[in-house]
Length: 233
Image 1 (cartoon, rainbow, N blue to C red):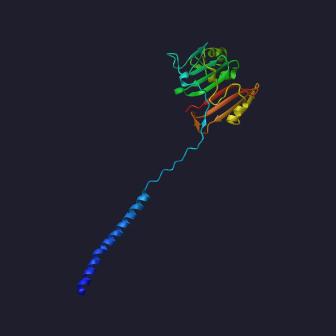
Image 2: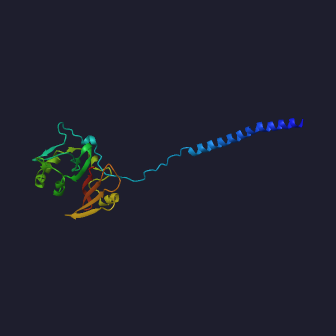
Image 3: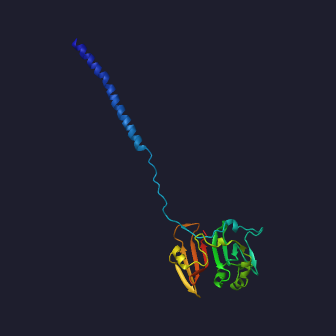
């Protein structure tokens, strides 16, 4: 009798042992799987914001549509005055303000140089800066001086609101306004009572330009002429 009871107990223990082992192994596998899943869960990407402040170059609110050629068969916007002509430029004027803006254009309306001046205060230095031609060659300063007013008379008349830049500069503004906006000029000079201030922005992030240069002329502390240069890429 005793051996039979011992055999039953022995078999019972041996049969139940694997179940305990299986439960332990399953628990271990589940814990391992959960841990692996937790470790392999993709982490959110780190977003680094662009904190570099970009310098927005100044411009006039004149639209590209206004710059488009309105004359059929004149894609280069050629204007003739006497023996010389203007090419790839658009001239705007306002008789009440007695001011003119000239845009020197490149591909896709890119505004390379913009000139803004009083019609009754056009100096030889300014006229010499504006590229004009005769028979495909650069016109001489003598030719330019003789025929320059002919370009002003052919300029497109537009509203006075277009004669203030996007940064709010108008002819007649003070020098203090310029230095408050742009800081101290990088260059300055004086000639015949006219002070010339220049700013060069070439080594900073720019918007809509590959290099921006500003030249302002002041007489008795008031802005009388403004030239904006945008480098061509």
